[in-house]
Length: 195
Image 1: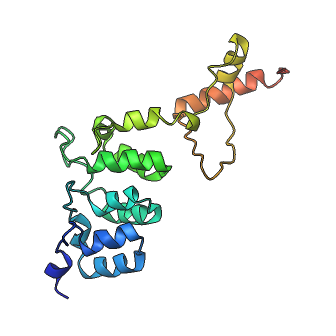
Image 2: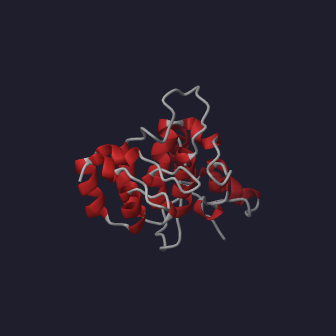
C-alpha cells in the first residue's frame, strides 16, 4: 500500500493510524509507523484536529498514548518557539487528559518541555492548571489540622501511600524543600506526637 493511501481520511475523519490508536491495536500502529512514520503527525478531521496520541488518551488507551507520546518526542505537541502563541490545543489537551487519567509521566514531560502549556487551553477550553487543581485527592493536605499539628505537618516528610486503582497522588517538592524537610525532620524526631 502506498504511503498516500495510509494517510487518507475515512468519512468520520480517521486515518488508519488514528483508528488503530483509539482501538488500542499497538502491533498495527507499529507496522504502519515503520512503513510511514509521518502518520504520527496526521490529524483527525472530525470537527477537531486531534493528533493520534490525543485521540488515544481521549479513548482511554493509556499505553497507546504513552507509546505514541514517546515516539513523537513532543514535535507536534509544543510550539518550537517559547514566545509563539499556543494556538494548537493538542499539547494542552494531552496535558489535561494525562492529569485526569493519572498518566503523570506524560504530563511531567510536557510541562518540562514547554512550561507555557500550563496556561494554554485545551479543546474543551480548560487549562492544565484547572485540571491539577481539580485533583485535590492527589495532593496530601494539612489544612484541616490545628496550629501545632500544621506546624509539625509542614516539617514532616510525607511517606508514599500505596494507591488504589482509582487513585493518583502527585508529590511536588523541589530540591530546597526536600533538604528543608530533612533538616526539620531531624529536629522533631525526638518529639512524641499525640493524635
